[in-house]
Amino acid sequence: MKVCMRQFNVYFALAALVLLCGCKTASHNQNDKAAAALRVHLEFDAGDTTGLDTIGTATVLRDNPVEYKILNEPALTEANVIGARIINTPGGFALEIRFDEAGGYILEQDTAANPGKHLLIFGQWGDKKTDGRWLAAQIITHRIANGVLAFTPDMSLDEAEKLVDGLNEIAKDNIDQQLHQSPSQ
Image 1 (cartoon, one colour):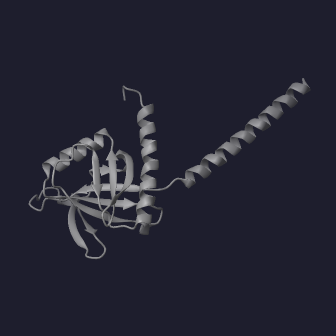
Image 2 (cartoon, rainbow, N blue to C red; image 1 turned 90 degrees about the vertical axis):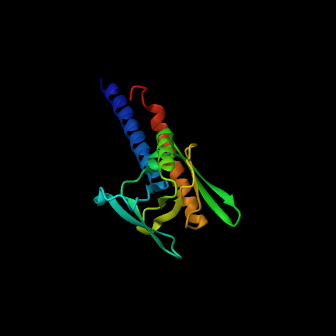
Image 3 (cartoon, rainbow, N blue to C red; image 1 turned 180 degrees about the horizontal axis):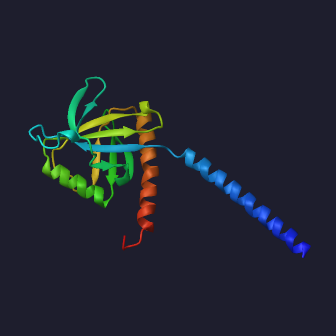
Protein backbone atom coordinates (compact mmCIF):
# COMPACT_ATOMS: atom_id res chain seq x y z
CA MET A 1 0.00 0.00 0.00
CA LYS A 2 2.86 2.36 0.78
CA VAL A 3 4.40 1.69 -2.64
CA CYS A 4 1.22 2.81 -4.34
CA MET A 5 1.17 6.02 -2.30
CA ARG A 6 4.77 6.78 -3.28
CA GLN A 7 3.96 6.19 -6.95
CA PHE A 8 0.92 8.39 -6.61
CA ASN A 9 2.98 11.13 -4.97
CA VAL A 10 5.62 10.92 -7.72
CA TYR A 11 2.96 11.12 -10.42
CA PHE A 12 1.24 13.94 -8.57
CA ALA A 13 4.52 15.84 -8.21
CA LEU A 14 5.33 15.38 -11.92
CA ALA A 15 1.86 16.49 -12.93
CA ALA A 16 2.10 19.57 -10.70
CA LEU A 17 5.52 20.41 -12.13
CA VAL A 18 4.25 20.11 -15.70
CA LEU A 19 1.25 22.32 -14.92
CA LEU A 20 3.40 24.96 -13.25
CA CYS A 21 5.85 25.03 -16.13
CA GLY A 22 3.03 25.11 -18.67
CA CYS A 23 1.27 27.98 -16.91
CA LYS A 24 4.46 30.01 -16.66
CA THR A 25 5.22 29.46 -20.34
CA ALA A 26 1.70 30.43 -21.38
CA SER A 27 1.78 33.68 -19.43
CA HIS A 28 5.24 34.46 -20.80
CA ASN A 29 4.03 33.98 -24.37
CA GLN A 30 0.97 36.11 -23.68
CA ASN A 31 3.21 39.01 -22.63
CA ASP A 32 5.29 38.63 -25.79
CA LYS A 33 2.26 39.20 -28.05
CA ALA A 34 2.13 42.56 -29.74
CA ALA A 35 -0.60 44.88 -28.52
CA ALA A 36 -2.65 46.71 -31.12
CA ALA A 37 -5.96 48.45 -31.60
CA LEU A 38 -7.73 49.88 -34.62
CA ARG A 39 -10.80 52.10 -34.67
CA VAL A 40 -12.49 53.30 -37.83
CA HIS A 41 -14.97 56.13 -37.24
CA LEU A 42 -17.31 57.78 -39.70
CA GLU A 43 -17.25 61.54 -40.12
CA PHE A 44 -20.32 63.18 -38.62
CA ASP A 45 -22.78 64.91 -40.92
CA ALA A 46 -22.78 68.56 -39.80
CA GLY A 47 -26.41 68.97 -40.93
CA ASP A 48 -27.66 66.23 -38.61
CA THR A 49 -28.65 67.61 -35.19
CA THR A 50 -29.91 64.37 -33.68
CA GLY A 51 -27.79 62.53 -31.15
CA LEU A 52 -25.35 65.36 -30.46
CA ASP A 53 -24.15 63.48 -27.37
CA THR A 54 -22.67 60.82 -29.66
CA ILE A 55 -20.34 63.27 -31.43
CA GLY A 56 -16.63 63.64 -30.78
CA THR A 57 -13.63 65.12 -32.53
CA ALA A 58 -10.55 63.68 -34.14
CA THR A 59 -7.44 65.65 -34.98
CA VAL A 60 -5.55 64.04 -37.84
CA LEU A 61 -2.07 64.84 -39.17
CA ARG A 62 0.68 66.01 -36.88
CA ASP A 63 2.33 68.52 -39.24
CA ASN A 64 -0.83 70.36 -40.35
CA PRO A 65 -3.56 69.21 -37.93
CA VAL A 66 -7.11 69.01 -39.23
CA GLU A 67 -10.05 68.50 -36.88
CA TYR A 68 -13.06 66.40 -37.85
CA LYS A 69 -16.37 65.77 -36.13
CA ILE A 70 -16.90 62.03 -35.75
CA LEU A 71 -19.40 59.56 -34.39
CA ASN A 72 -17.97 58.38 -31.06
CA GLU A 73 -18.90 54.76 -31.67
CA PRO A 74 -16.43 53.17 -34.12
CA ALA A 75 -17.90 51.51 -37.18
CA LEU A 76 -15.06 48.96 -37.24
CA THR A 77 -12.48 47.76 -34.71
CA GLU A 78 -9.62 45.28 -34.49
CA ALA A 79 -12.27 42.66 -33.66
CA ASN A 80 -13.25 42.78 -37.35
CA VAL A 81 -9.69 42.47 -38.69
CA ILE A 82 -8.59 39.24 -40.36
CA GLY A 83 -5.33 40.56 -41.81
CA ALA A 84 -3.10 43.59 -42.14
CA ARG A 85 -0.06 44.37 -44.22
CA ILE A 86 2.23 47.15 -45.35
CA ILE A 87 2.19 48.02 -49.04
CA ASN A 88 5.08 49.81 -50.71
CA THR A 89 3.95 52.88 -52.63
CA PRO A 90 5.83 55.52 -54.59
CA GLY A 91 7.38 57.79 -51.97
CA GLY A 92 6.39 55.72 -48.94
CA PHE A 93 4.01 53.03 -47.80
CA ALA A 94 0.35 52.38 -47.11
CA LEU A 95 -1.51 50.06 -44.78
CA GLU A 96 -3.99 47.51 -46.06
CA ILE A 97 -6.51 46.21 -43.54
CA ARG A 98 -8.70 43.23 -44.46
CA PHE A 99 -11.96 42.83 -42.52
CA ASP A 100 -14.09 39.77 -41.80
CA GLU A 101 -17.47 39.26 -43.46
CA ALA A 102 -19.37 41.41 -40.94
CA GLY A 103 -16.74 44.15 -41.09
CA GLY A 104 -16.70 44.04 -44.88
CA TYR A 105 -20.47 44.48 -44.92
CA ILE A 106 -20.23 47.48 -42.57
CA LEU A 107 -17.44 49.00 -44.68
CA GLU A 108 -19.46 48.53 -47.84
CA GLN A 109 -22.63 50.05 -46.34
CA ASP A 110 -20.84 53.03 -44.79
CA THR A 111 -18.85 53.84 -47.92
CA ALA A 112 -21.85 53.44 -50.22
CA ALA A 113 -24.03 55.72 -48.09
CA ASN A 114 -21.46 58.44 -47.36
CA PRO A 115 -19.52 59.53 -50.45
CA GLY A 116 -17.46 62.66 -49.83
CA LYS A 117 -17.21 62.07 -46.07
CA HIS A 118 -14.15 60.68 -44.32
CA LEU A 119 -13.29 57.47 -42.52
CA LEU A 120 -11.15 58.50 -39.56
CA ILE A 121 -8.71 55.82 -38.49
CA PHE A 122 -7.17 55.55 -35.03
CA GLY A 123 -4.35 53.12 -34.31
CA GLN A 124 -2.67 51.90 -31.12
CA TRP A 125 0.47 49.76 -31.39
CA GLY A 126 1.78 49.51 -27.84
CA ASP A 127 0.89 49.68 -24.18
CA LYS A 128 1.76 53.37 -23.72
CA LYS A 129 -0.73 56.12 -24.54
CA THR A 130 1.92 57.76 -26.73
CA ASP A 131 1.90 54.63 -28.93
CA GLY A 132 -1.40 55.56 -30.50
CA ARG A 133 -2.99 58.41 -32.44
CA TRP A 134 -5.29 59.32 -35.31
CA LEU A 135 -3.57 57.96 -38.41
CA ALA A 136 -5.67 59.05 -41.35
CA ALA A 137 -8.79 60.76 -42.63
CA GLN A 138 -9.53 58.67 -45.71
CA ILE A 139 -12.02 60.39 -47.99
CA ILE A 140 -14.78 58.11 -49.25
CA THR A 141 -14.66 58.27 -53.05
CA HIS A 142 -16.47 55.01 -53.83
CA ARG A 143 -18.19 52.00 -52.33
CA ILE A 144 -15.63 49.54 -50.90
CA ALA A 145 -17.18 46.16 -51.57
CA ASN A 146 -14.17 43.86 -51.09
CA GLY A 147 -13.74 44.36 -47.32
CA VAL A 148 -10.26 45.89 -47.71
CA LEU A 149 -9.37 49.38 -46.52
CA ALA A 150 -6.08 50.83 -47.77
CA PHE A 151 -4.75 54.17 -46.58
CA THR A 152 -1.56 56.16 -46.11
CA PRO A 153 -1.03 56.56 -42.35
CA ASP A 154 0.60 59.42 -40.49
CA MET A 155 3.22 57.20 -38.84
CA SER A 156 6.75 55.91 -39.25
CA LEU A 157 7.50 52.57 -40.90
CA ASP A 158 8.64 51.17 -37.53
CA GLU A 159 5.32 52.17 -35.93
CA ALA A 160 3.44 50.69 -38.90
CA GLU A 161 5.28 47.37 -38.52
CA LYS A 162 4.34 47.23 -34.82
CA LEU A 163 0.71 48.01 -35.62
CA VAL A 164 0.54 45.42 -38.41
CA ASP A 165 2.20 42.75 -36.24
CA GLY A 166 -0.25 43.44 -33.42
CA LEU A 167 -3.28 43.44 -35.72
CA ASN A 168 -2.18 40.16 -37.29
CA GLU A 169 -1.86 38.58 -33.82
CA ILE A 170 -5.40 39.70 -33.07
CA ALA A 171 -6.54 38.49 -36.51
CA LYS A 172 -5.21 34.99 -35.75
CA ASP A 173 -7.26 34.96 -32.54
CA ASN A 174 -10.33 36.27 -34.40
CA ILE A 175 -10.04 33.55 -37.05
CA ASP A 176 -9.48 30.84 -34.40
CA GLN A 177 -12.60 31.99 -32.55
CA GLN A 178 -14.66 31.94 -35.75
CA LEU A 179 -13.46 28.43 -36.58
CA HIS A 180 -14.30 27.10 -33.12
CA GLN A 181 -17.80 28.55 -32.95
CA SER A 182 -20.58 26.14 -33.62
CA PRO A 183 -22.77 26.83 -36.69
CA SER A 184 -25.76 27.54 -34.41
CA GLN A 185 -24.03 30.52 -32.75
